[in-house]
Length: 226
Image 1 (cartoon, rainbow, N blue to C red):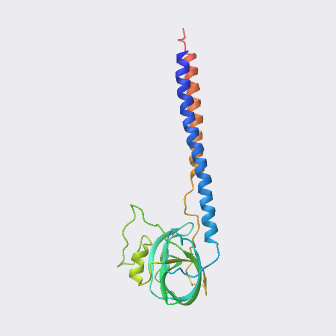
Image 2: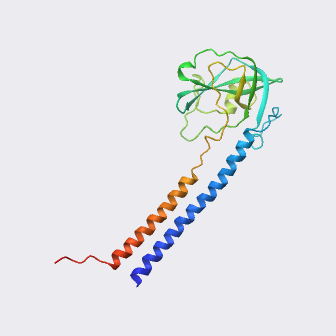
Image 3: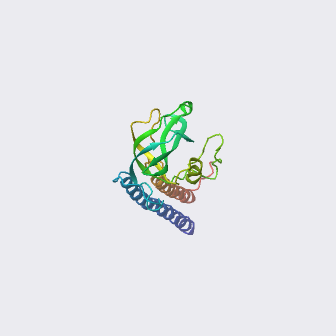
């Protein structure tokens, strides 16, 4: 009897732990979906003027509607776009209401980065953002060669002589020729909790199957054939 009870308890306890981990991931999924819905609602909310001092905790994703002038200077941030390939985000100074801020105008392919882009008076609809592009493997920005690997706001503001405040363009009027806006969205925010839950539940099923198989083999040992 002990040969059955011990592996059975071991199997049931292991499966219970794996199921609990799966349920925890489902709870995390509900939490993440709520966060994403909140962010989506904020992104598409009513546009407001620029805050006097941007706060990443309270003003992140805040929609803004601005009228001003795009200055000719540019910072080129290396990026890859699905189904398009490699290119650059074009970051320029934008003067509005006596202030100068950073404007993420959008994407150009690698081969078009050298094409001159007109600036001038423009109406911008976009979102404030404090992007987190850098991770431990991100190279340092090549400022002299104007090849950036992360949108480091303070560093860009220093180079372009603006406030450390970044607006990601959603709509530009008149249109910015050759530049495709990359508006803020929740697309890049990872939400893999469902896959994790499925993995834990699958492991629980495999664990139980292996436990039952082990007990069955213990109860039905192979007999040597004559």
